Image (cartoon, rainbow, N blue to C red):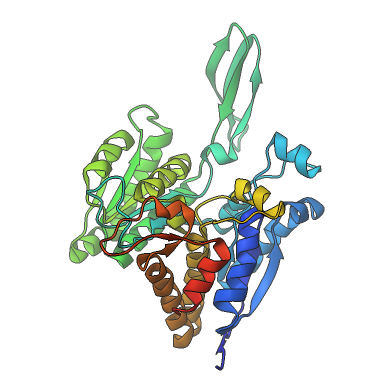
Length: 399
């Protein structure tokens, strides 16, 4: 069988631990037998990030800007324990955070729905897409410990004029955190959300806590309102979809009662937390897609979960694992489809669609990884647990 040709390479960002192992198997079993795969490869594994002093992460983001489409494996964001484990030179920042900042992108996360896996919230019949702002807030924060004394927020304008606000007068030890965002980034986030909602023909809900954070969150609220009124109101009305702003606690209550079919726009930290909650409520975090979209039309696809450390430690001991690779498969299929769309390569688009269909069909026929077995209930179908590699081989037979 002649392999499908690619016109332009994907930017391939390799990662860490068990997802790094799955990454190679997915290529060998599901992609390379069918596609003459062309990638520009960057090793974002923690060892190589440390070796290059994290320059490889910035290089991969610049390559993504150049080629327009990237696919990324899950990576470790080191903490103190990882510093010791990997003997690191520095506690390197999150690669995702670096890439998001450089691309000025918005992350859209949506569940993969499978017949036989019912969400924990049974009213959810359609996907809930989490749109996560990918800049600033706690991920670009400056923090530190404080002792007895006064903590102040100081802003100095271009003319040297200072504005000083007291954060807190400490009578004992404590901690201080300062966050920021930019109007430019918030406007990009808003436009990305409105465009995505229009493309998907889904209503858009945006939430923050402007009743408490009257200036910071209030700025988000006002920018979204201005962008909607000036640029998108007529388009939304013509498409028959709504834009709604409300408090985040109100949206949480509404989401639980909804049937899904909504784009939920969240600030950075809110989106980080809520995407995991939504994914788990649909069945498994390993069944959640994630794509970073920049304002200038650059796409970076990845799984929404981490590196599956516990399974990796079993794997390196020679033990069999049943790690779910579905979200990582869909990262590859999403990137290949987008590459096909941009390069006008219909056969590559068709392959990406067939790969996703084969993956879902394999589960619906009762062949799946261990995390899904307890969730799967379908009349006439008995769930069968497969190890990771056998699951991938079962998918390959259906492509």
